[in-house]
Image (cartoon, rainbow, N blue to C red; front, top):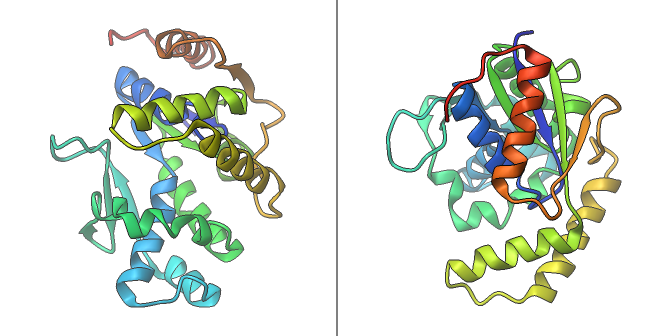
Length: 232
């Protein structure tokens, strides 16, 4: 395995932003594994499969061929998401996909099928993989495991400010309560619960800005993987 960086952490910890910036800096593939769950959700919706039909959703996950590749177009995408030969990069961001993906991701059979696909892509190396179970389940032999953490209050504030900047009618207390519930679900589920791998380096992002976190983790990568530092 060559140059596999796993970044896990709770919702709104900043792991996707960090992973994308690191991937660009080291010229690695950025792989947000959550896109695979979105891809299966999209496939179910397009096929008219009920989201609560677990067996049918698992069958879709088992049959779908999902590829994640470097972005082919300069249209804001961070990668190409190809599902059964078709570019679904933007389709997986549809509101109906957003509203149903959390259900799909709880199905053990879906997670098992997608874990195999994630390993297939991750094994190619020179990749930054981000998710909630990369270091513990998907790529337990990753060269470097980072668990990016932050208090629920800090993460809720970040999400609140993001939504306000987009012009959304956001309420901090509502976001905070929803995030607490999400943390509870993620950390107590039977399949691949959200926990830091025993050999992960925990980075607390409270009271740190994005640049500070990036520089801290970049130095860890250079140290552990003995890579030459590249200009951002």
